[in-house]
Image (cartoon, rainbow, N blue to C red; front, side):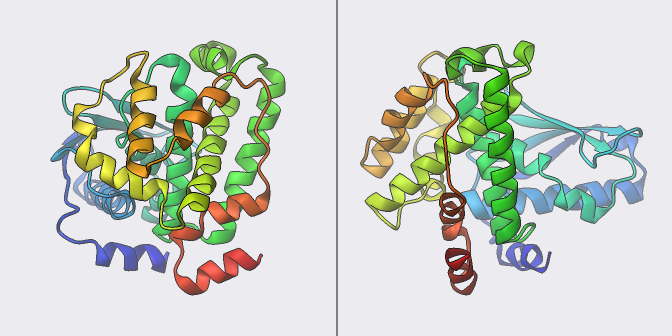
Length: 288
């Protein structure tokens, strides 16, 4: 957790999206302070990792829950003229439990891409799932071993989910809730972005998805089409343009038709996290 504290201290004032709270008045003063501190830390480490959001403020709708086995049992993005997030938070979660929970990082990661159409939800959820782990690794919330373990475990759930929900990925994604195909949809998309990350690295060791997203926020996010059939192609086309490649578009056309689950080795997952590590830790991650 010391890595997270160090990362937050390094955050510049440029990473200062203002949080606008809804529902926090239902909490007592002590609980309000805990929740506000957690949310501010979360947005700071996210913006330090992915760059500033393309919006000056962020609406955050909160609901306190009493019966929950998780610190943050539910979260969602509210798409509007100004995108916001909604979180259900356990009344009894400690500050450390809140920081260690993945939900906030996942929902914040969604703000870095436009709303995509239902057949492309695998892309949206895969991006947020991959980025939540990248943010947590970069911020010191998890270490390199935990990063690999979490992603490998998720990929295995995705593989098993593919047996349970057969069919082309785009079709399954469009009907994800009825089919209960969340594992396949989320983790197929995660595999897509890991595979693209490694292809970027082969093209140019200095290129990463994170570096592209930082540039995308500055040049293109505010003008992106939302929720249209072409939104995913447009989003990936911008990433290709920024990387001077066709990596994302080519992978997209093959992935959306896939009926199998992608195979990624543990070494590939390790390599995908290398750019988030300091020099010494990077060598350890590479050697394992």
